[in-house]
Structures are given as structure tokens and as C-alpha cells.
Length: 96
Image (cartoon, rainbow, N blue to C red):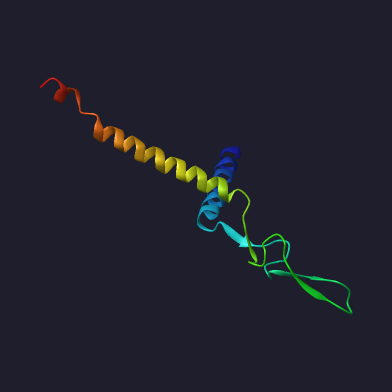
């Protein structure tokens, strides 16, 4: 039972990380995706640009920057390892 629960938790985290990688931006929580806030009284409402998203109505989701940085590091490491294996000749070639 607990093993299945652990697998479900791992799957949920993996899906969340995949969604962060595929959709790094979401609606701004402060202006609810409108891009502006209503300030002032009911008599004189004034629309003010949202200071959090600066009017774009979208903000970067929590931890999406970290997920993208990690993916970039893994990609660069694999490219670096591929370059190293291309450059170094095998031991049989050295003896010739």
C-alpha cells in the first residue's frame, strides 16, 4: 500500500516538473491575469498597471526557472561528454 502511494507521489512530482518545463508562465496571481489593478474608491476607480507582472498579465511559475536551468545544465554536460568521446582516440589507435 505505501509503495503504491510512494509511486503516485513520484509520478505527481514528475508530472508537475514536466508541466513547469512545458508551461513556465501562468496567470499573474496579483491581478488575476488582467494586467491591471483597480485602485481608489467606488466613486473614482482607477486602473493601475500591475506592479508584479508590469501589465503582461503573466508571471513565471514557482520553480520553473530552476527546472529550465537544470535541463540546460544536463544538456550542456551531455554535449561536453560527447565532445570528449569524439576527441580521445581509443587505446588501439594509440599503439599504431
